Amino acid sequence: MRAAGSLTAADLFPGGVSSPVRAYGAVGGDPPELVRGKGCRVWDSAGREYVDYVCAYGPLILGHGHPAVLEAVAAASAAGGPFGVTTEGEIRLGALIRERMPSIERLRFVNSGTEAVMSALRVARAATGRDLVLKFEGCYHGHSDGLLAKAGSGLATLGLPGSAGVTAAVAGQTVVVPYNDLDAVAAALVANRGQVAAVIVEPVAANMGVVPPAPGFLDGLRRLTADAGTLLVFDEVITGFRVAPGGAQELYGVRPDLTVLGKVIGGGLPVGAYGGRADLMNLVAPSGPVYQAGTLSGHPVVMAAGEATLQQLDAALYARLEATAAELEAGLREARPEARIARVGSLLTAFVLDFASFFNRLRAGGVLVPPSQYEAWFVSAAHDPTAVELTMEAARGS
Ligand SMILES: *Cc1c(COP(=O)(O)O)cnc(C)c1O
Image (cartoon, rainbow, N blue to C red; front, side):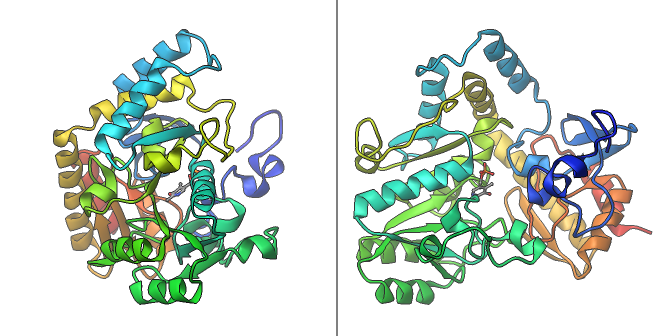
């Protein structure tokens, strides 16, 4: 890809990308030069069309260029801002989130999921007066220093256990245990009695391929954390407003103390949010002593995109998402009987032995999936039977 004279992406950006999961090292070849998207389809600069299951890695639950989102963004842009004050749109989106996710009594908007996780854990440490955080192997919670240990897709694709540049002191404040292993959680809480501020979890793991919570796992976490005086933090950056109207916490009926959101709530624009029990969120400045701030937080254009997106997410839409994703799952099982398919709602992973060849077969057949075995495919409300049929054909190959 060439632009700005003769400079290439590889000349300008490390690995040619602004985020490691976008690199094609694991599958070979160069990423397509995508220039346009509409619904479930994207086009490259040569006019080639693809069915898109990357969907920006989660935010585009309505697909590309949904008219209501485009209209809201245009109107909010035309109105000027950001204004450096709280706006109506921010209140409306906050209220929509709280209504659908009642564990969130109060919340704050930030600019990314990374920032939201980092801030939620700061609150947890302040509330408990404890330093340690327990996370699970394979769960990704953004790229803040303390959370890069065994952090799923991006690192796993590159074969990295964690990140250079993280101090031993910071890394030492994260305890890592296997996902879906309640005994390991119980043991870690005993071994670090009185020191664990929070257990943070992806209630459906979606950054090591899709791994659903084992029956009783989330309930067990709720019980164990409550007994240990530890806060339970759900990272619903992917699952929030995707796996159910009220996220994974509604789907599995478990109420966390704090929740982290991102992706879908920004309608495709940069966003994050964290929220939960009012007594905890009241610790955040200026009502409390936990400092956290953001120049562009609650940006009116982002809030408008998020509100327009959430407004589309009614029962009928979730039913359609589920039906499409179920059809895709069945189609893939038929086309690739050897694949192991994991799916929760519109999150799906096809585990295959030779991912690179599967990826390139799909690509040649006009279907784009994330260039990593560990990344979920995202089905949007814009995916239709024709797209699913095309996907099956591409998966079957010749
Ligand atoms: C994407 C993601 C994040 C980080 O969000 P960014 O906006 O990329 O910083 C955090 N947690 C989970 C579960 C994610 O999937």
